[in-house]
Image 1: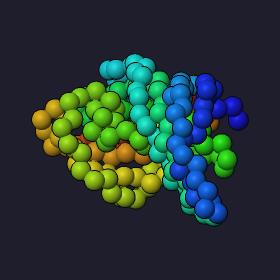
Image 2: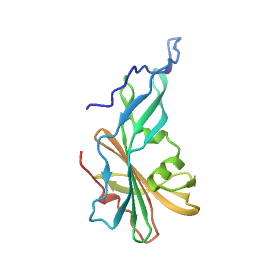
Image 3: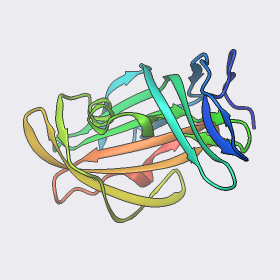
Length: 199
């Protein structure tokens, strides 16, 4: 599998092995672009209201344990596909497709860079709205996204001044990672299972 190219990439790490230490070194940010957006089909009950490809900067941290304790921090500049939908009943549904990035080479570790972004920022992007707060995410069953069953996470967020219940699922999709977030009335089932992707 081909992963995003890293220019001048040097892992900055702190390791302890037999009394020897490896000091952190400066490294160039990883620059990566998502390959194909996740979308809702036009036949769904939702209408596309935002279609964009924002660039987001974050620092991805990886902790590895074993004979060697390793902490790696890598700056990432990721271009993601943003798709925001709204139903006639006012339900919001957002899809963020981010490039999966390799943070360390040995052992190989691949991460969704959006997991390193504050929840308020991620929900704001997914809803294309002003988000003031997001409560702690909690597991609440499972849902299927792009044919993969995964954990359904729920929280409460203040979106455009109103408190709303939100739901989130994340899956790997080829060289990308897809995050879907829904804010819907109690009687509305989020369309996680309807999401498609041409890659």
